[in-house]
Length: 240
Image (cartoon, rainbow, N blue to C red; front, side):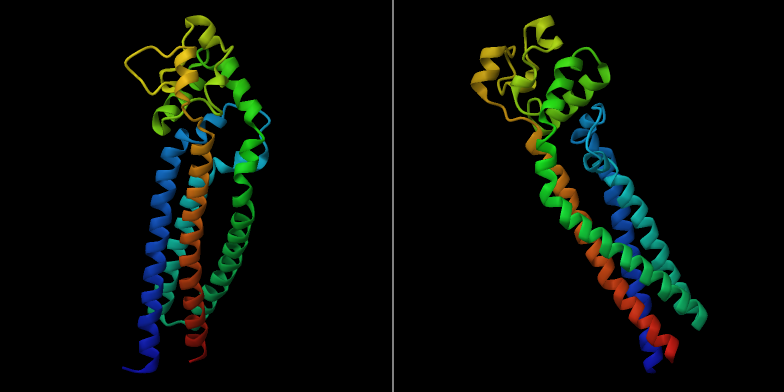
């Protein structure tokens, strides 16, 4: 086997891995998009949120689109290697270089903003609590979103049971959502909610966002490593 043939095989192997990374990114994006309603979906109904928090709701779309782009690049790399056309290889290398620069930018932004997620979500506590007081029990969309989130994460409100104190829901039935009490066999009144101290969903939302950030960083890092390798191989093959 000649050196060039070995490089071609290695090039195809690298791009095959890139395709799998892209497929994994699309799969994760699909799962995140389905499950986001349990964590950040409750924030969709709140007005005047900081743009950084609004952007969190697009994580699934970003992962899906990035995965599709990575798969396209992997397929393009395999095709350029199979065709053994220097012009196609050079085009592939230049496209890959642009994508790598974009990935570095995304990684830097994620690493910069991720530590600030908890602080940003902490700044909207009052807005979220007001949304619960004004809309929970009256607006079906808001009520269902919070019920799903509290059921999924076994939490109560955004901060704790006090988010429901004075709300239309409590005023109507003099009870708190059942999620605010660990004991499900009895109705959850103020005394029960106060004594059982069920945590608010704030921590669950923060952990959801941080978990997604870690997944994005891992996938982007894997794609970045193999794309750099593929780009170097493409440049070498262009010179041979």
